[in-house]
Image 1 (cartoon, rainbow, N blue to C red):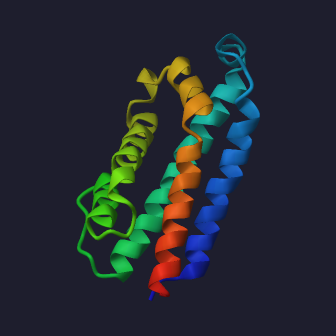
Image 2: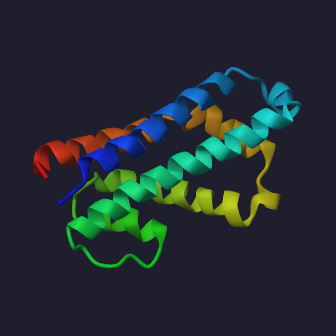
Length: 142
């Protein structure tokens, strides 16, 4: 059975992190580049929010007995294949998971410009994921 409290707690992590990231959104690239703590905080908030997405997806995949994903990206792919999230959103969520891997394993290659671009143009992807999961759970009645 899907643990709704677990999912709600991960959604709250995502929402809280997005609030923090939104506060950095107004900075120009030049200003953002000069704020080392904000850059580090942005990396953390993005990584943690994506990890919460992975946790939600992995929980659903496990509880619905949909197999053993080989990677975190596979979690999103399975959710799309089983139409638990819209297929047209899967690519975005896979890219988010891969970016989380960059933050963890290739942190030395992450640029301030790409972080700034995420702040300016991609924070709504987290809200879309939350909406997709909420729609699935509402339709499924776990």
